[in-house]
Length: 104
Image 1 (cartoon, rainbow, N blue to C red):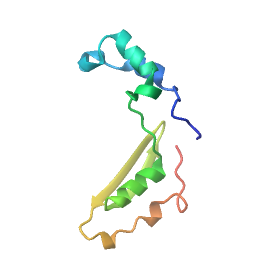
Image 2 (cartoon, rainbow, N blue to C red):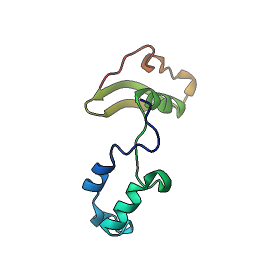
Image 3 (cartoon, one colour):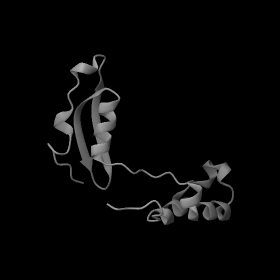
Image 4 (cartoon, rainbow, N blue to C red):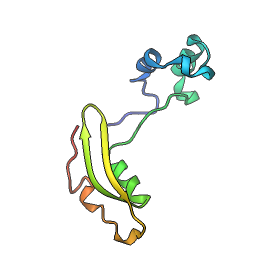
């Protein structure tokens, strides 16, 4: 989507919803806020930056046979797969997006 690493789309959500009571190393709200707002340099905020195609490729790479892929709004990717001993028998080609369309 052309999103760059300095994107702050979800920073307000992180500041609003982060449970500082469960993250004592984050410090005070002021310290956490300062660090979070400077995420481009500090890299303290966990962000998910993958799509369905990447999930399929990752599971294929580690030797999982994909059985089904479903996407649910707003941003859930659910994959049912099996661990396979003989990687030569794995065929996940049906789940690559050039063969299948995934829409949220």
